[in-house]
Image 1 (cartoon, rainbow, N blue to C red):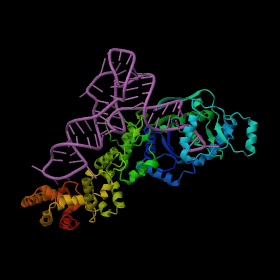
Image 2: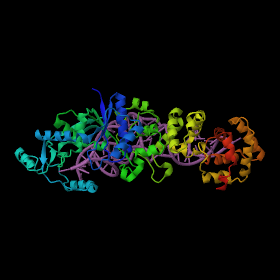
Image 3: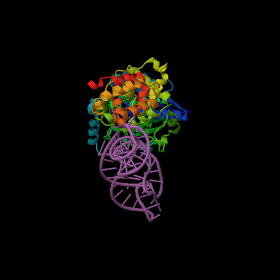
Image 4: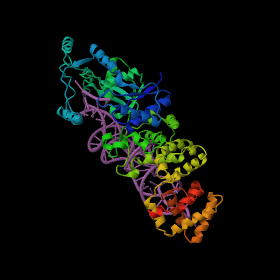
Length: 497
RNA sequence: GGCGCAUUCGUCUAGUGGUUAGGACGCAAGGUUCUCAACCUUGAAACAGGAGUUCAAUUCUCCUAUGCGCUGCCA
């Protein structure tokens, strides 16, 4: 039997990092075992589901490179089947109509209300005391026919227990007395989550359910539904949660953009880097290594390597330099400076394009220059954004000067105003404007002026690139070229700031 | 409240009945006679607590604590 797994997000917001990781693990598992990775959008909660959210999920998956097999399944399209299934269970006496009027509880206070209700019933097991549970068939039918609204609940046995072997958490058992008669169909005819999931997973032929640990206890309910339907439940593997730095739940509302996948795309992350980071948040191959290509992740991935304890996504609010997890930031930099240049180039191209710095010549007559330059400056960049911000001076004459760099490296040495302009003239005479030749000229010039090389170099760096950090100045001169180097050395713009 | 799950450096993690408890990020110090958030070297930094089993426990068992999850006509 071929293995089929699915990623089943509900489109009630953008794709967040926790869900992204679930998708990734499903994908890796499917590719590892040669199975299928399917996508199902769980949009049964019409009130909260949005098309925009669905789009964001699709974009996110595409960005991470998680291509799914077969057609997307929209759960809402199967609502009729879910209803029929509920009625089938009703027919078979495995479910019953509950005529209890619906209780309106606002979404906001729901968690507290549940806890409060539970406290009031403290010490009690779930009582099978719903008056409609054992209503005669005739009376139930009659009341339904008369138009009285009802929900359909699963009739959970009085005694016994469910169990399943979770691939991550091991044997799980739950006494029936801990499981109430769950609602399958709302009184407005709307199928509920547990029913919909089970029906769709059966329909899609899902063999392994890999999902967040928040569903661990729900699984028992779902197994009850499988049993009522006479179907074999799939294998389950529950994933540890990804927590906020305070070890609380990662929430879109509370933590905002830092938990959204698209944030990372927009912040200049290399997809492979973020994917790599995500893979290691809750799973490890058991070796002392951090960098894994997608192929390696697929090869090494196993359900056994998934951890049982939750992981903290260690972002820092209000700290621009550490705005997200340091390791993610580091990994992105690592990818930028070590990934094959040919893989990086398209990413840089799209960044430069969106910053309006892209020129077609970079893929034509200036191809070699462009590639060398990217290769030079990528060494100390952290995100793709750096190519258009810190690296702007390489692609445009219109670049900003960092005031701190100007003060420290230029204005602190007033002589530089004269010197750099003189250096420009000296450059005019250099025939072969290459690293070694430039070095000769600059060294000679430095000695003549009786100053330190650093003064000249740092001053030139501030003037030519606008920033205080960057590659070796000789390489910068060379890559900017003779003409641009001279022009910028003579420029007075920075001095007049 | 009940039920469930978890607990190794600040964070991500490796690991074992006997180890100097390893790696990575971050942090600190030093180096790199042009900078640097890059690079190199070094350093500080952990087995939640208590019992028990054992010659020996971070590792096995139990208890406690803490955190998280579920407990809904949400998903």
